[in-house]
Length: 442
Ligand SMILES: Cc1ncc(COP(=O)(O)O)c(C=O)c1O
Image 1 (tube, rainbow, N blue to C red):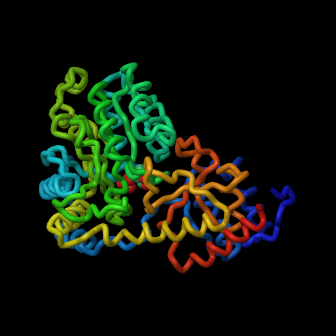
Image 2 (cartoon, protein in one colour; image 1 turned 120 degrees about the vertical axis):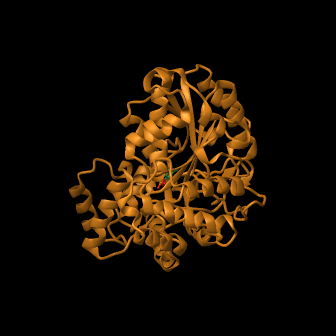
Image 3 (cartoon, rainbow, N blue to C red; image 1 turned 45 degrees about the horizontal axis):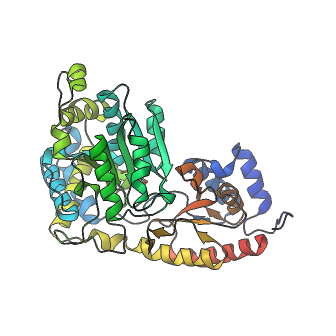
């Protein structure tokens, strides 16, 4: 590798260097997503050059009209002046229950189908609940890599967690690894996202079955974060009531909570509405600890009337109508939500190719024996550089991403790239910049 610094970079070297210095960041490579967003905005406005922005997972598509129209109508009818029911408007609860049946093939009572202020709030509510169920045995186990903000939520609550990178524990190896943590009895919760942010691995049925069986054995609740619902585009999960269904741990245990975000699958991130879905068994489960603290022992009851009431007294009214209208259209087969978002998979396929052609390697590349799907994120590395070094180097080449290190990944050589903000018109820029990068680092 060259030790000499190459200052002939696609983005003005001096400006980038100066902006990094002004940012006050000790290490650009380990900056949080929002810190990187700020730095890149600064460089873009100073140089006038547009970055290939792959740092933040924001939807790059318009929201479905059926949702926005329903919200406008609801607002015109005056819902803004009324407090929504904490557990959601009844018609939305019914539609969520139907959605879970249609697309996961799982039965759940409408009581456990609760809109939240994004999945972000759903997760926070679950963590808060674990704290109230047990003062001592309330640890969370992350099957990582994962979404960094969930760990921040646990830090805010001063709750303990453990994490391991699943990279070396795929397939049957997962059981022993999970048991090595759970067997001490100190955990209430296992959490993972599937498809996974950041690696885009998708668990196989074998792996989901293992997670389910282990959760039964140790009486631990599985929080399955489906933020990228139906976005494993290798399979068509878009037909209501027809196989194949979005794979889920709910087939293998009754002790589950699903977080179904509308942000990516429905391009509805701005309205901050997600679905917290609690299995009937867990919803109806009684806990002495809850009885002692709140006077009522029911998990579901306390989730609604203690936890969610305390957090925000329910979810903003008009987005509930928007989500209701979208789900109704999806459940009745009138609106194929997957068709709208498939473009992410196409982009990922093309972008991965450009990286690989220019000396990069895909870090997480397989689901057991199968090549990984093309979706919202992918992970890459460059020989001889750590992920953090790569992030900083990329600033000079007009490319932004995040380091895998901040996601709980042990693959510290890697970075996560999000495809959502990169349109096809930018592919030529990306290709040129990657070529220059490769030329200067060979
Ligand atoms: C894995 C994961 N979980 C949860 C969320 C948050 O979802 P929401 O926008 O519904 O709060 C995200 C958003 O990027 C995510 O990637």
